[in-house]
Image (cartoon, rainbow, N blue to C red; front, side):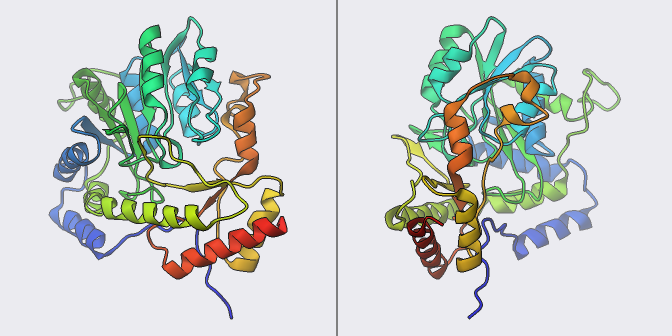
Length: 367
């Protein structure tokens, strides 16, 4: 019997999203307009404890404009993890500042506060942790460290919509947070991003920067960019915002089933006080060939998977010149061992059981 592949990710776009887009197109208000304003207000209330939310055209733009609004530029250093998508390091580098790569915590895959402290120099201006895979970074330790050294804290929350630590939502800890609304994220706008902040001046500067540096037409105050979100994308995002809580609960339930039933691999732990939203369910495959493990899982069990991320930022051709000779042992180990399994809310119970059966068989066989 031929089985359909269980995909590693599965964006959910329904008729409500289609209807919302059609309504915008019929309205004639397609550029940044009332849908964007409503989406910003609803995102603020729903996901970031009332911090201001400013919509932009991608998660990378959210990071970039947040950094620019905070005054980061040439001569500055920002400490970031290397074990993340390249947009984290890219966004620092594109401002003219230097990304300084630090190691991760072996359990959570997020930035290690001790590694941050070891990476400090007189040029350090800020720390930018990533809430990787939907698990919050150790924000309490990072914020304490930053305060003691007079540093800003920025949050890359691209994968962590609704995650929290000790009751505080990610995106509400630092000077700013940056979310992605790419199709494979826990919720999408088709494409887009959101900057969140409690600092009015940061919010104002982001709004200027996304719109050619102007608040009033042709009265450009700053050198800015065109990083606006359209009403089409905002309309999709508003519909998805009403669904994301239920999807998150399903992701968490799927993760709990995998936690309970997987054998022979290291399942992702959750730190005390943390709410993990499982953008990815990332295991460690130890003592076996990861590529063969993935190949067997796909070919023999029709279970898709992904590796996020096989090449750390500090070894990418685009960024390695910032970190010559740098040794990040936990980052390198994670890059060799991680595999992300399907956890998305479209999974059926039968899908979950096949994932478990396949992973356990491949782990037992050593793939």
